[in-house]
Length: 220
Image (tube, rainbow, N blue to C red; front, side, top):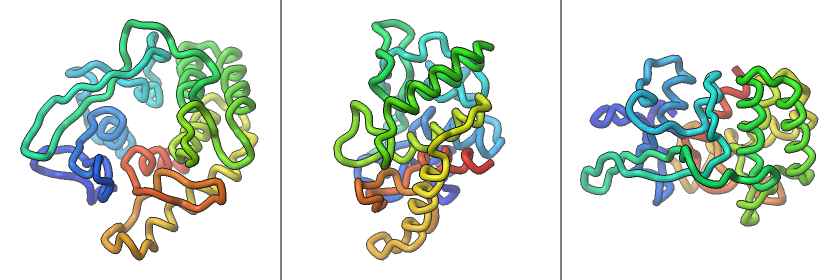
């Protein structure tokens, strides 16, 4: 994770190898998350529209279920700083479509002080999306996104409820880390957690800052 830091930008790159991400610095879903997890000062929230991920640090996002938008903040050659943020207006995303949003929403309810509602939202999402292998939602394309396993575990810990599939999710995270440490096709990849896994539980794709940092939070 720390090897992805670029001092010329003062930010962490999204991924070490993935073609679409290795030259991108995402402000919220990567850098705010990394800085706050490592307990470093980060003032991203005072400069740009916020992303729903801030609820992990106890903030409240009244428009959490709205869609995201993208903005390019800076471009230097083939390197770009981008911001993914949650829109403050628009039609809310319905419950039961995306596992991560429903788990984030459960944490947000808890941050509001609505404990019963948070527990109900968490348990409903757990029942809705877990298919025995991972969290399968509207974005599923044949691969399971490991960051959703992480958000699930973090939500359970934040709200104070038992995660029924905790052991399975932790095993997938450990497998994703082990694969990243022993990967012959990416010999320079030393550390991190792989972003996805398939129906046979085989890790695949690249590591990412988002997945790696959320995985760290699961075991803090």
